[in-house]
Image (cartoon, each protein chain N blue to C red):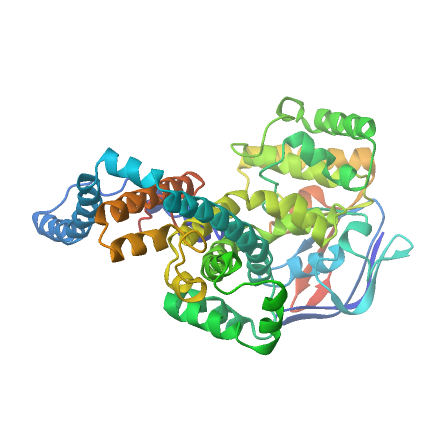
Length: 296
Length: 211
């Protein structure tokens, strides 16, 4: 979130000479050295564990395993469904998160604080509970009536809905920060130049929000790809029907085919790494990603 | 002419009550006051960016109190310029004209004319990133003037500039007035800037306007 201050109060930064000074390259006293060493040791343990985990997966599997897994029709179906559902989820998430993020960043209205807390529910709620809640929601009379013409539960739409409920919350968070970082004066100037609010939004705000929108899209996509709990409850784990990649890992694991499970895991890990790089490349708006450390 | 008749403007818990003033056509009026005295709030009210609780605002013989900002005929230059980072200088100069549906040839003629006049011709295809404070301020002025507004509202246009650039923008503002005869309302808290540019100085003190 380091970018917030840089947009809202540029004068504060430029008038503070210590901000511009070089970071920790200065002389380090022996006592400080011990302190830094302790920090590195504690932090390093986690980083090493993280790398070891990935390395273990890599060494466990062989290109042969990976190839064999990719050849299975079930896994091919899961890849296709994952790609399709994640893409639709991303589009739906942006469709909803752009208006919510903009409204929350720009307008004061009664119940705003409550809405703010509400929007975080999918982030803090256990994923399984989201799945269960969706299942129960679709047991209510109006939605059961809907299901007679448009089946959702235990069908492909349920996969997208389960992914969307969680992924959208992350897109909303990101876009809210993105819009808050855009100087509202730009819209106001556009309005004095002849735009109405909608024109100012399309011509000025949305183009300025582009990096944030790309970040939100990538995050939503990556989040949707890894979604498992809600899908297991709300969509089931039926092969060639509601099987997405995390379901594959679960199913392969449950029948003892560890190699296939690891191969699919690596596939998802690869996608996650690519997503992470894209987020960084797009400036990580709303994440504090890609920003340099700030010094007091 | 800008005429404020008994207007009350609210900004959060802060209120400017029952303000009246007349700014003659073609004059350059400086509005001075301490930080927090409500200068920007008043300017936002005039530009239509903040709603007026009571009273009326007139520009020439037209009441603009309830008109949207874009129909008031006011060019607005905010403190930091608020340039659009994704648009080139040319697109800035043509922004208002495009929104107003001018034909491309007319837009092109007008942007060339403004660029030449404001010394922006070599920068026409540049984005704002990396421009100097003076260049940014000239782009903001050109963008505000493009559609020939009868009134120009400036919110501390010189405050973020170094001395040399400040002199350059003072010259530009003087020329704008000489060339166009536009009515200028200029917020500043710098007395010498006000005395150099304005032919009238108003003070906003404790919610009242004094000359």
